[in-house]
Image (cartoon, rainbow, N blue to C red):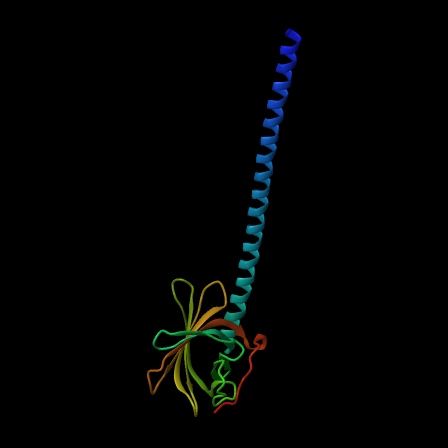
Length: 196
């Protein structure tokens, strides 16, 4: 009987240690997986921050050289209504002393520019750049031409190439705000319609 009790005690102790070892190994595996996930997230975040820093530097260089395109993927109208648009056909372009504003919507009506909207060219003047306390860059300028006379207010957010442009016409109150990415002129992928 003593041998049976001793054998049973040995079996119970070995089962308990096996169970504890299995629980410890599961906890270790969970901790390892969590550490791997955290390391992967940190790596992805660092890569994203590095890419944003490069994009910001490119956008700043383009702003200073007066050769940039703000490719818009969202348009907000005066009444607050918004529309998502194609960034290839909705943009504000500045190339040295010339500027172009184009908006085009996905409609059946071709519009004056042939792609569903309006394209206007003009001369850029009075370019002023400032940086606010948060590091955002504000760039204001005028575009004057046959089809346009407007003030342009561009804001480039710190740490990336996200930008907003507010177009404020001089002869009416049909203000329009475009949101998108500011890229150097040579990196842009835009399609320009007929201008007037």
